Length: 108
Image (cartoon, one colour):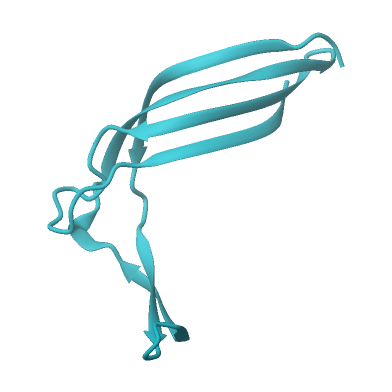
């Protein structure tokens, strides 16, 4: 493995909803507030409550290591903050996406 080459990235991100479903968990409590049972309802459709397009800003960086010839090992991390409302004006409030991601891969 050769000398490391660090890099940074900053830019917009656009996300398109392909599908959306929600798993709901309902807990049963006893008189002392302890959980005594749980029911899961899965696969409920989100309906019109979520935005079909969301815009955000992504910032990140990483490092590339030459391995052999044109092959490089790439390690990167990023932070994403949503700029638009993910709930699309729903009466349930508003929500903006946030995520942290890390990845490793081979580039050639």
